[in-house]
Each structure stands twice: as structure tokens, then as C-alpha cells.
Amino acid sequence: MSRIISEQEKIEFSSTNKIGLLSTVGPDNMPHITLISSISAKSEDELMWGEFTHGLSKIYIKDNPKTGFLIINEARVFWRGTADHYDTAVTGEDIEMYNNQPLFRYNSYLGIGVVHYMKLKNLLGGNKLPMKGIIKGALLGRLFKKSITPSLDGGTKLNHVAAGLANDISSLKFLSYLDDNGYPVIVPVIQAAVRDGGRIFIPLTAFAEELSKIAPGSKAALYVCNLKLESVLLQGVFCGIEKKSGIKAAIFDIEKVYNSMLPVVGYCTDEPYKLVH
Image 1: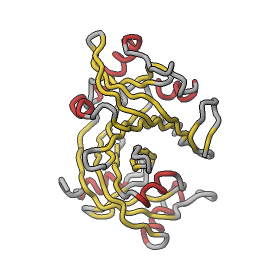
Image 2 (image 1 turned 90 degrees about the vertical axis):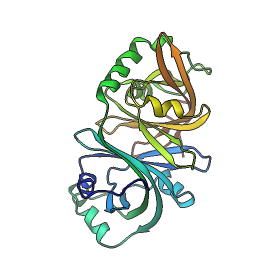
Image 3 (image 1 turned 45 degrees about the vertical axis):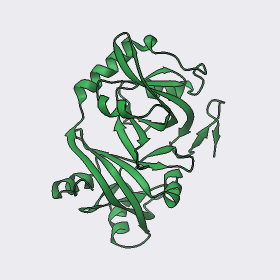
């Protein structure tokens, strides 16, 4: 473990006004990213989070406890790391604590029914997002979009709703890949843009060193969301780095689209708006 969670970080992690993401690994060795804003510190080397809905991430951790997480606070300071899922609870003080928070205390339909516990493996961060590089990349991506090589399948994976969300300059985007030990790692790639309905490209104006080290052909996932909590999960292949018109960009090809918004979640077929559960 690189370091423990400090007392100040425990306070930061406990805020309800933050973004929390959890990346798990499916049976096909594909990363899967879920919004888990309830993630917080249980102790200096433990994390916990409340289960609001029962989706694929909660199924995957039963067979593969390796997880990755990312937390961003209101000041755009972020932390990320890896952890091992090891236990759950359906009663006790942590259940009561979560359900007494305003979001769940006055929710007549859904609450926290399970609390999950993870042992910290690695923790990085405590720095602000590199917004200058992110903004530069977002602008360059839109100027040089046509210079990026199009996808081989003609770009048929995204319907106009998902494409609009992914291409919105204000949307938040995060890439997950597996490290050498099989742990999913999450990288902010807010500058990413849509080349076409089958390909996303990420200008290397932020997190360039890390993105350049991901092996071409690696399975990867890209989570896209906005502040209205509209979201979509794209899964596919990290294709490496391309340099066109003086711009270096990482290339991500989409294989599957997962609707992660309630009330109906599931994988989308090639038919627009149709889901497969």
C-alpha cells in the first residue's frame, strides 16, 4: 500500500457533495464503471460504500474482489486508487449512518440496504485536476476531429442521445483499464471527444504519460456523465496513440454500450434505445 488515508482525507471523503466512481472487473476481464458517490473512509486503510441499487458491479465483486476507485470533491481535488472488496453488512451503525443522510432519510422508495467494505491497496492524489490541459484538449479535439482516423465499423455503436452526451464539452469522462496486477485503474479523460459513433479519441493534453503506457489492445471502459446525472458506459478496446496534424491522441474503440441510468439499466443492442438485460 502506498500510504494510508489521512484524517483530512477522511473528512473530504465523507462529503455528500462529491463524485465517487467504482470500477470492477467482469467475467470477460472487462472493466465496468459505476457511480458510487457514497464511497467514504471507514478507517485509515479501509473504504466503504452503500448499495443504492443492485447492478452489475455488485455482482462482479462477488467473483473478483479487485476494484479501482476515484473521488473528486467540489474544489476539483481528486484521489484515486485500488482496493480489495472483502465484506458486506445489512445491519449496524454504517447502515444507519447512510440511511440518516438527507438523500436517503427522506426517500420513501429506495435506501441503502447493504454496505460494502474494501481494504485499501493503493492511494494516489490529493491534487487538483489539470484543468488547463483538459480545456486545451477539449478545444483541440473539436478543432482537429476530422484529422483522427475514423472507426473501422462505420461508427454505428452510439445513438444520437449517447453521442450527444459523450461529445458535450461539459460532460465528465473517465477511462478505466487493468493494471499489470489485474486491478482496474480510473483516469480522468474529461477532454475526450467523439470521432464517430464507434470511436472516442483523447487528446494527450492531460495524463499523457499514463495514457501512453496503456498497452494497445487492452480492454477498457469509458464512463460519461453530466451534472444532471445522465450517464452512459462504453466498453471496448484501447487502441493506442495516434498522431495527426501535430496532435497526439489516445484512441478508444467502442464495442458495447451500457445504459447506466435508472429506472432501466442494461446493454443496448444495435437498435436505438433497445436494451438487453
